[in-house]
Image 1: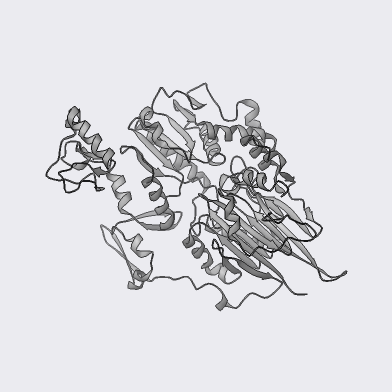
Image 2: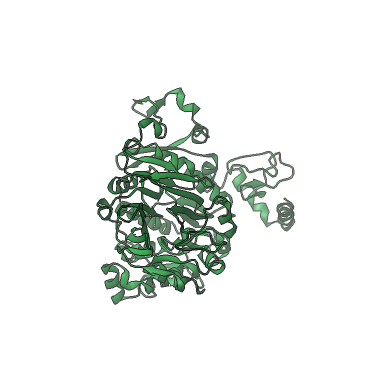
Length: 569
């Protein structure tokens, strides 16, 4: 019997624009998640096969079935529009995901999703089954197992299984048990499709992540700083609230935690699935409100009139933070949930994010890690336990996928494939020996060097061949590096110019004649028309001959001139 071809077409792999993969298994077309914001993106795959005979689709339908792996927006934000255009195309998901979506979206589409029970094969068609296994990332998140049974004749049949997962987590969180890798050990998985997550990065233990976040918040409050934390509508925000409500050190704080309306809706959605949450959460909810606490020293409330500072504010991650500038004042720390010890490309994403957002110049930004998806070692563990013939990685950053496909331990055992947006990937799943080594991705490049210690410093020297790597220029942009311990590993990264400017923006002495104390300095730019720096983005520590003291801002004529300059620019 000839092997069955399996095709995958990545319509989108970026959380900003949405995740959606088109899968062809046997004669069936399946959409794995649909987080696209533009329905026209489905037309990118001009090579779509014809509809199947047993399960016919209308000429316009892009697939026979749609699977929703979780309730995060990047995996489902376009489902409402998709259902409106193709109302006969079924959408399958877990009961918890359906209940969360039904609470968050008033449209009828969420209530019409088809519910699949956990760990129970469901017949999508006579020769195609779907089984959902809890993925551990958040309530309702699922690993989707699709099994197609191909029949050569009346007596011979062979089955092929494709496993797909969005975000997954192998550590217990407060609202979801970990993905049990043992549930995949006894299965025959031909093709595993999974998100690259954090690539090869290794996370510290979960308890350590939580402790570091609490200490960061306590330090900010002690310094009389308010804290703004942008979070998704469901998932991370609820984890943070429960962490702070149950942390013995934090509950003694006299502080109000405000939650904006969008994230508050996500909190209420968790109340709709209370019977499905862990027993510890159910016991907690029997004694008091799951999230809201309006009495005692620590108060958690939906966003209202902020009257006392400092406070903590949880807002939806797409919110314009500038709207809170007037009420929160100048002493604000923005905690961005992007891992601080991530690869350079992820770090650049954090810098670009805040460069594009107009934040008050006095506000500080800092990242924190409270991981909701797997790191490199956990990704490797999942692959080894499921033992697929083929592994396909998708991620918005090509460098992250490249790092995963170059892990020697994976290269030597599996056939690894990157999923590139807009490019079709076809493999033939069959019980065959592993491909020869030369068919794998190129081996991981390593760079030799030596470490020299002295009484005052330690110097790391690397060979000149590292300069040929295209990533080196971004890494060595300023010539400054930062090293951080991750367990027993030392992670080194380069510091960019944008990060250095931000880090020193709030550290200048007030009695110094520098740009930061100049009347014409706004949003990291010079607005003095007589200065050679006019219109340029300059360092707060910079100086020029036409410096004007900050006190001159009281002059109404100068203030009016400055406002006109900013508007003209």
